[in-house]
Image (tube, rainbow, N blue to C red; front, side, top):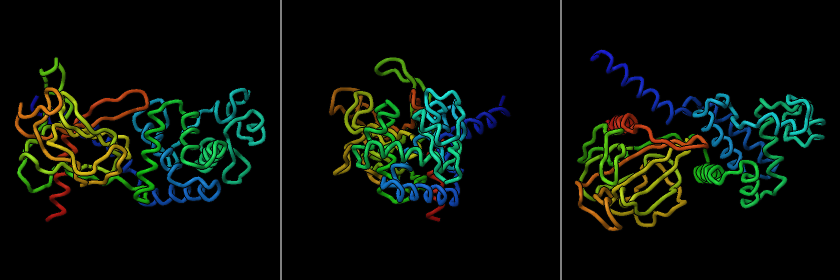
Length: 327
């Protein structure tokens, strides 16, 4: 049995790392190719490149966690056959731009090869650009177009969040991570994800507790958008940040929030968002029912549901990376 433990641990570590950092398979050349395509679409449609990038990243994230979708490619936007060819088109695999247009499909010839290929990234982006342009080119126009296409408020929110991150930082590679506490300070933590919790009813622990001095700065571990800020009777003062990989990072039991921190704010790795505290397990302002610590959780969303996964291996990796940078 003891011989199996390392194998099980390695398997779990691999699964967790692959979920959170799956997009890292993109090398520098891939980012360049994607950016070139997005900027080309901006030149053709007058729609800023970061909206195309936001849509593509949203669908890219879905492909990593959904078995019913193809694996990600250079461009990962997936347009179903019936939308591409037209809902009444008898030929679901139609690639003729003229007949697709006749049946009001989205399919477009974006690379001037005479075909509307649903599996060609340039054709797909051209189809997206044409669809968005039907509604207009302003921010509000694009939000309306996205809602009409996806029919899900959460999808629109995630895409716009991606676009805002790309706009803010002006690049596609937003994979850098940071440890949530200043490395080299006094803290301790171990793997407690999945452990039983009793307060408020039987439940499992959906994170890792990092015990530290009261008020020690808590930092964003990623590039992301502040989605949530406020009180929860379990987590006390807490912050939720969603990153470019559609991973939701949850910071709880804070002593308070960083000055000026607001919902919708764009942050980067290392941005201070609050301080270590002991709030929670009661009405707003309850504090001191347990030692000061940061509860850090990570969650994924596949477009249908959201679930927690173990942050401990990622914390160990980020801490190790920061220590290596200092040496």
